[in-house]
Image (cartoon, rainbow, N blue to C red; front, side):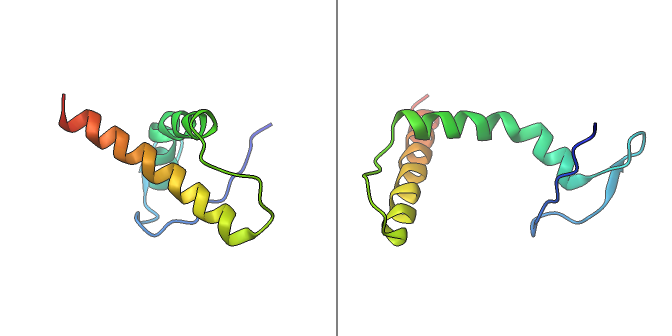
Length: 81
């Protein structure tokens, strides 16, 4: 069974570029980069700064802090290579 996943995007135009399977550019871009999303999720689980809170803004803050710290680490490693 084929999974249909809707994408909300602002970065890419809704052009068909894969002529054999007629997939939109957004789907092709996601499929090419989804391994990075999986790595980011696993690093967020491993190096989390979250605390137990039920207050929604704090949850969003800690999630943003996780993403920011991992992105800064990746940029640091790339700059010092």
